Length: 120
Image 1 (cartoon, rainbow, N blue to C red):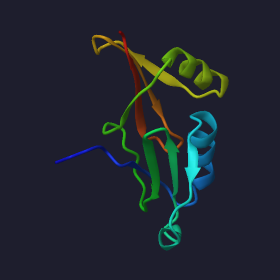
Image 2: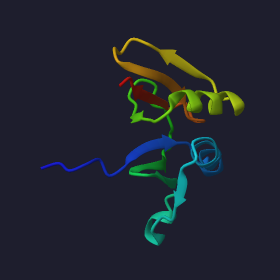
Image 3: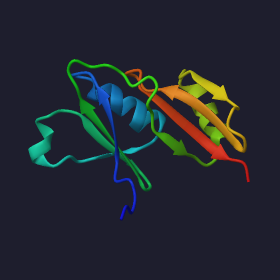
């Protein structure tokens, strides 16, 4: 029986850990997690925000996920949009899902991320 998703892993190119920290840690305000010593040598970086864990894994050759994506339910998407604007991060608004206010944004590596807030 499935209980939950433990984490989402996104790929990134070699040497991109600082860019991941700027985006996920700085803009999205995730907290960086300490990777186990045995996994540190693989590169990448892990993050957490509440019950959401994201692992950025190094992949060579790298190709961003442009269609496949995680979707994050957020609270106060309007505030998130303002934060993206403040940091110069572009996003695309999408109103094709009835009952949801949602946007798409790419991480620094071109991976597609969906952010949505359900209208209640």
